[in-house]
Amino acid sequence: MLRLSFLGSIGESNTLMLAVLVRFCADGTLRGPDNCVVARCVDGLWRVGGRMHRDVDCEGPVRVRVTRRSSESPEHHGPFNHLRTINGVLHADNASMHFVMPGRTAAGATTCHELAFLPLTNAPSA
Image (cartoon, rainbow, N blue to C red; front, side, top):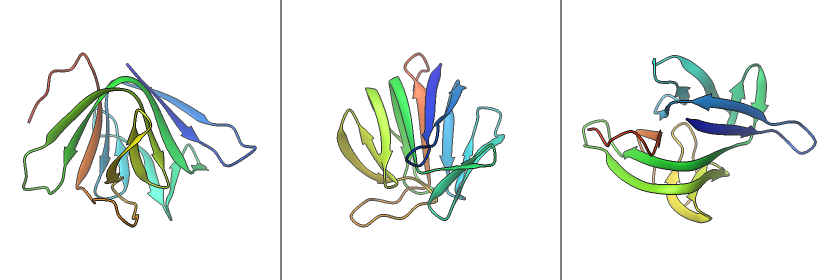
């Protein structure tokens, strides 16, 4: 089970979410395992439950599945102990992975079609 925290602005509380897996999609949505939209990126912030959040934090162990373009096979990275976005760029275990979250833009980071956070217990799939 993944523990995602959506980080609120300074002085605001975070929003915690438990999930089996999550997918950050090219349309700026965050989807759960049933493809249901659980969050949406709006103007660089994550809208979760009617509140806006600046970044996402995920405790591991967790793997990352990156699909750079919709026509390409995904790449698997990890496992990592900790994932976090900083200004829309994914960091794993305190080092930048240089991937910008779908729906966001960031100078010097690679865009991708989809990013998925997967618990260590799921086997890699294409």
